[in-house]
Length: 221
Image (cartoon, helix red, strand yellow):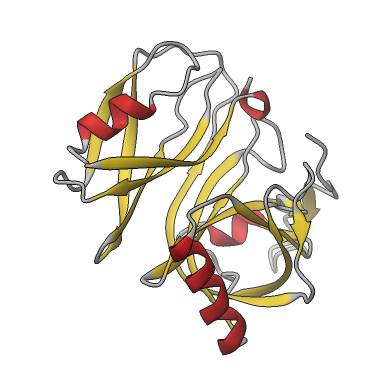
């Protein structure tokens, strides 16, 4: 997958003592998968194992335009499916917990479907307001095998989603919507390579149904 990539490393001004430090940066175009419904909107960064995309990030957000926000929530609630957005360039590391300059909002163009794979662009750019950074993890490029994968449940009310922790290589990015899950928190799910474990995830959370929102293997080889 091709994504906009810019400078990765920036130099900080010299400190008073005369020493020079190097600050890491992950500046670029960071596309994200969008999911949720009436109870909340979420954005999951589409990661890779190389800079500047080597972080798994999950945001809870709303749109500054109240009418657009309501419309998106209603659309996703009626028909759970993949949406994405293509944002203006920013430093992904500004979502790191405790960052001196946390990213609070940015502009993005939304797509019904994948923005790089034929998704339908929406008519107007939106201002995305970050309510919470729910997950931030740097990814290791080292080859690693695992026979289980950890899934995290997020949501509220009648709208629940499970997101896979990316913790091995090769791996896959996986987001599903669950109907009436009985298990909360995180669960470990048996895996068979990089095949989608949808039915196993449903059983692990004791859910009455599952809708697959996003499943990606190529970006995480």
